[in-house]
Image (cartoon, rainbow, N blue to C red; front, side, top):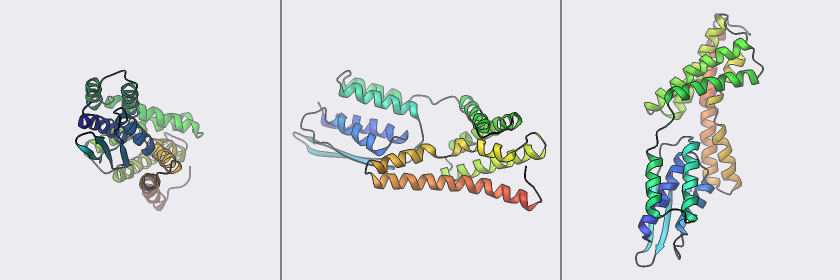
Length: 256
């Protein structure tokens, strides 16, 4: 088995997992298991949230090391599951290296969910959380509309490669502005509930969970980095909502 091809395959799987939001420990374990298929490979893997190193020992070539830089990361559980399944099938000998590369290519070129479906799901999520937090039917209905607008805004900003901090900031402002507008027009009873329910799609819960798992696994560098990322995201959301509420109150706005 060619060491360079095996290394490229392992790095390809690890890159998909890192871009899809997998925790550091899982990526390192997956890449090491793939490289260990070759006897005497002595793999070494070091993963950070923005890239990773992987090396393999060759019989004639010695140690070969590759580095992958990852800048665009998101949460894509579908790709993560497919990458995990691919690695397990290869390690268990169910597929060959050539078949593995073919599946890797299919995963890389798989189409994301339709934009209308993402927007609709965001609206349903906001609707559900508003009810969960004790909102009335009118509050949930308005939260659904806010969610549709929020989903569209997030897709637009993502297409323009806007930084995640600004994306969360503008998302918080949109949620606050629309919720207050609906309240002023008498379309909902509690703007606070609408805002709380509608910002849930922005809350970095997955990032916080991954950070905690990294820290518990001893990956303090990755865990601290992800926790800082989550804190920055939460700060951006709070700033976006807070600015609009401050403006509303400064012009004489009262409680619900």
